[in-house]
Amino acid sequence: MARSLALAAALLALAAPRPAGAVRVKDLADVVGVRDNALYGYGLVVGLAGTGDTAERIVYTQQSIAGLLARLGVRVNPQDIYARNVAAVMVTARLPSFARPGTRIDVAVSAMGDARSLAGGVLLVTPLAAGDGKVYAVAQGPLQVSGYDAGTRLAFMTKNTPTTGRVPGGATVERTVTVDLGKAPIVLALRNPDLTTASRLAAAVNQKEGAGTAHAADAAGVTVKLPDARRDDPVGFLAELEALDVQPDMRPKVVVSERTGTVVAGDGVRIRPVAVAHGSIEVRVDRQPLVSQPNAFGQGTTVTTEQDLVQARERGGGTVALPATTTVEDLAKALSLLGARPRDLISILEAMKVAGALDADLEVLE
Image (tube, rainbow, N blue to C red; front, side):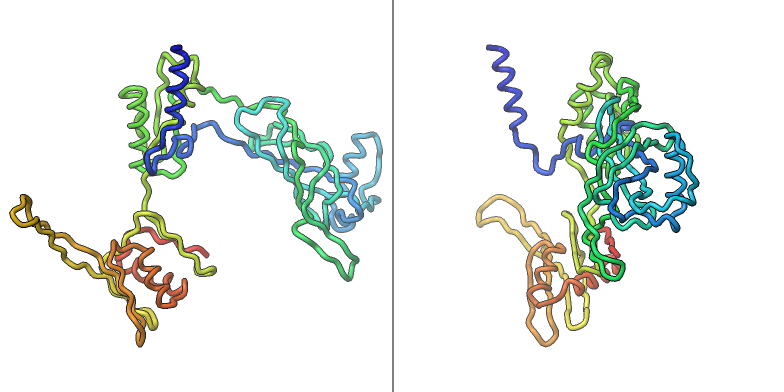
């Protein structure tokens, strides 16, 4: 009976709604040292239907074929090799965290020479090394290419990118990267560094595990002490920390793309009182005082506040007013009612940022 009640309580806790805006620690930060590692290697793809490297142009393909044959006991002069069904390729992969020897991982294959297509090819044994020069995996297998290349020398058609492909599960892990989770201290690295978020993360850990367990070292890292009682179970301890809910904080930002006319505004972006004239469009942001008085013979005091008023007017046309909290969304609505283009909004936002009326970071994409 007790076990049933405990299980029911655990299920209710999992089903409980998360506070608005709260995010799991797992989605905010990573454990330092627990990450993927990039692998790369040089290899040959054989079995191509005449779409491989041109022997007289790509010298290293000739030398690679000659070297491969020499290891198999066949001596041949590299200059005597004229094979169009072989292509020199670069093989890349990502070694996951805690991957054990024997684990299969996917690899990507990309042509290095002038091969037209890798469709139908087979990747020969290719050692994959990391940045330290050690081999961590070995790749081999048939390629899967999403594109194709067909035609003659004078007329041909290409779809997608036939010079790249993948070998699903084509690499076998031969060496593992060990990570000692029990080594103190544990550092949680925020994916988006922020002082407020780091402080809230440390406070959430301390509330669960006790004061002094965690402290924010800087805007990007939170140091966590592994309790002595959890020395034998660091994985379970980290799993509990990853399930904690934290309210992240971030600087308001507006991202615009002049090439596509795209405007993306995050939450919390505000516009100060300002007046902007752009072409035939005039935009004005004012603040009007509001007075709130108590009812007759009622208790209370008179309160004075301010309300933002956005006005967008087209010269020679009508005027649109949005009496609400001034945001980029309100401004976009007012301008869209006047038939303004997205590029007009981008130019107005850039002018507001220069004038100091836009309380947000403005990032312009190329």
